[in-house]
Image 1 (cartoon, rainbow, N blue to C red):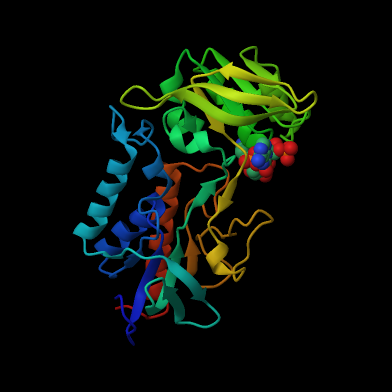
Image 2 (tube, rainbow, N blue to C red):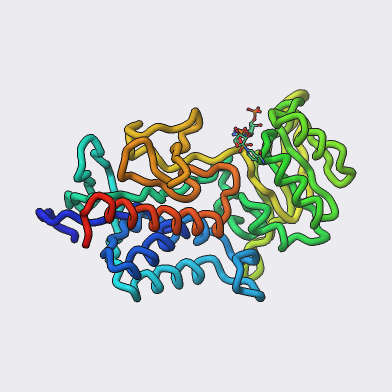
Length: 320
Ligand code: NAP
């Protein structure tokens, strides 16, 4: 389905993280011929992590990209059509809906599931790329386990940063909480929980100017952060084994041009049936969920959305 056609698809799934692939597995097994537009980052956020230790079914953990490749293969096995392009726009003013793909195709669909996820905000430092996944991370629940007994830093001052710091304090021997101001943005309860933890040391009025480390081995290894104190402009190197950036996420909804109801941070708002404000258009995963943000919850939402699409198509008499 890469060229324009008069065919109306039952369902187009936009995005290829755990939510998208799970929806595709359910819908293809239900003989509803889903098509997945896999986007620019096939497999989503999990392809940027190394070991996934908390996805049930893998007692020894699982390589993130491999886990996603298996989900893709499972969706393919049941007949999911996969197009390795982005969807650039959705016109949901009338049904059937119209989607435009990066390759120029125009697709008509009775239903859509938006599973485009969210992207962690980064500081924009050169070292973030060099040491990515080798001491630079964005998810403590995913990657904190690598730093048992080590020294780590969390950057940010919101609920995410305090939550990450508190989680990491259970594993690491020392956690620095690096914040650019001297007051946390986090809710009182989460701020207090972090600040009263004896393993967590806040570094106020401080920014990370870069990440430093050892590049001589097989893999890069983070060893320190280059810090600047904004009060007195002093600089120092802080020895750490890892930095967790927790300065917020951005839901990947820009291509929707505000056509769907979202909260003040851009996360899509869905009802209990995973449906957006437009009947027949669903969302699943981190594109609407800023609370749990786990691969397993995204997969669960993908499953829910798929079952709701099936019900919708049956209810409307669009499938036999
Ligand atoms: P957030 O509330 O927007 O906080 C982002 C933090 O990062 C702020 O402290 C901000 O500093 C800092 N920051 C932003 N850009 C920075 C930069 N370039 N350099 C250094 N620091 C930077 O984001 P969040 O903590 O991810 O929370 C997002 C939403 O999810 C919130 O509504 C939050 O309540 C919710 N959330 C809830 C839970 C929970 O309830 N369990 C957990 C996580 C998140 P400033 O303070 O100086 O602006």
